[in-house]
Length: 132
Image 1 (tube, rainbow, N blue to C red):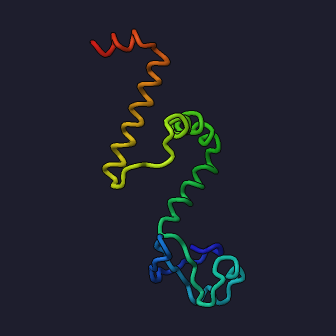
Image 2 (cartoon, rainbow, N blue to C red):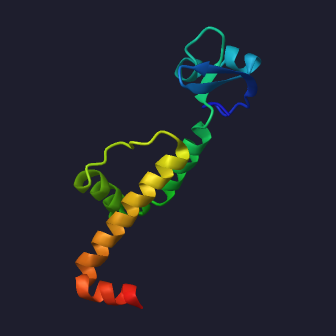
Image 3 (cartoon, helix red, strand yellow):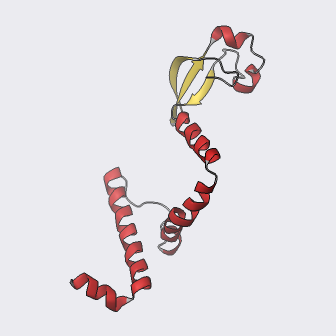
C-alpha cells in the first residue's frame, strides 16, 4: 500500500547496484493523488521499494509498540558484539564463504564466553568444572 492507502500492483523487479528494487504502481490512483510527489518523484508513477523493506517496516512497528525492547537489547546483546569487536580487534571477518564466516564467528563467541567464565568463576573453579 502507498502512503495514501491505495493498493499497489507488483511491477518489474530491477537490480539497482547491489539490491533488487520492486517497482510497485497503481496507474489510476497515482495520477490524481496529492501525495504522489512524496512517494514517487518520477514521471512513470512507480514507487520504488527495496525487496526486503517490509522486514524493516515490521521491525520499526515492533520498536514503536515496545520502545523498552531496544534498551534491553543494548544491555544484553550489543555488549558481547562490542566486546568482540573492541577487545579482540575484529572489525571484519577474515574468511570469505558463509560457512567459514560462521566458523570464525563461533570461535570468537567461544573465546568471549571463556574469558567471561574465567572473569566470573576464576581459573580454579573453571578447571574443576571442566574436569567433571
